[in-house]
Length: 265
Image 1 (spheres, rainbow, N blue to C red):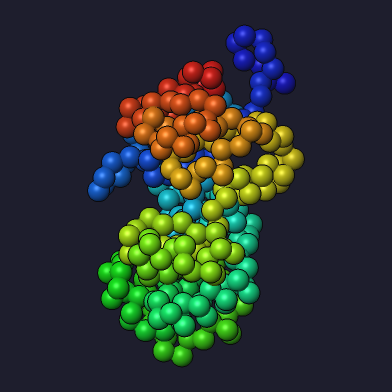
Image 2: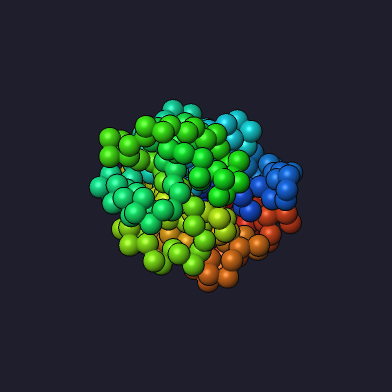
């Protein structure tokens, strides 16, 4: 039995951190503040569970595990689970809905791309997507013979269009999507809480012991009543309104401040 100095019984917490704007800060060269590194080290020393929670694909985020000092990760917007650096699985997008959207994009002449495997690669059938977006986020492979009807697994889709077209695409109404750029959007899972619950179920741990940190729109569904939700000082207003606690900004020791406030370190 582990006890803290106040003689209260130790309660293991399960921490899930967004990356950009939460764990890391700074533009165009992001970095992890020393205060955050101290807090993470103390949390781990105190026996708590630490995990990344990101919308990035496992293939794009796995390289950050060592860099950020983590062994666990909720990736793919909640559909990917990694425990102790072992990928337990990634749930793909709904196949029929993806095909329906791609058929609509073809009909309307809108460029698209597909991630069909756990790799940092996007597949397109011509150069129109890259020419339209000038995107260098990931490696792009052009396959003129690519037929999306023959693809069994869709992890992400990429749609090259301006924001004003988002509401006009019927296929988007049946799929989760986020937009980080004016030139294109990502069709990808957007509920990190799904992955968080899967991790907690894996350990048979109660949801009330979850603590999440976030700052942006794609963290909104991660902020739930079942657990403790902490918004960074630099977070959007909508997230702050859902938060149980608003800490300082990421570049002003926000994670460390919150952990000290709640007595976790």
